[in-house]
Image 1 (cartoon, rainbow, N blue to C red):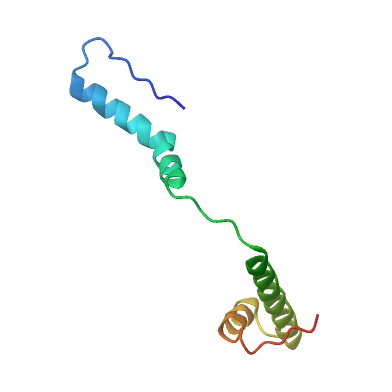
Image 2 (tube, one colour):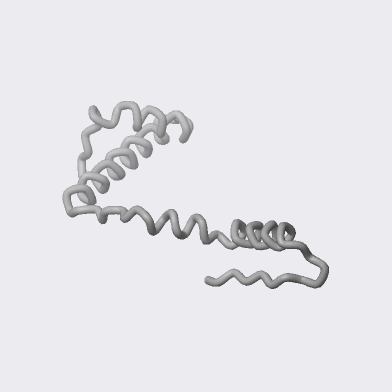
Length: 90
């Protein structure tokens, strides 16, 4: 995406530069460039599997606690705290 700023009549260089830099910041190009600077690694199969199990453990634990009458926030907090002790019966 290109950002253009032409000098307007009776505009000095400082005003032009300020107008250009504000357009540049609003365009989101800075964030786009920073994202592309560092390559993020793709998840391998083991990591995908472990994350899937993690999600299922938390889901089953929260469902049990909701049936017992706990609030959703409390149940999620407990699930994240005790994730290693939770057994997934799936």
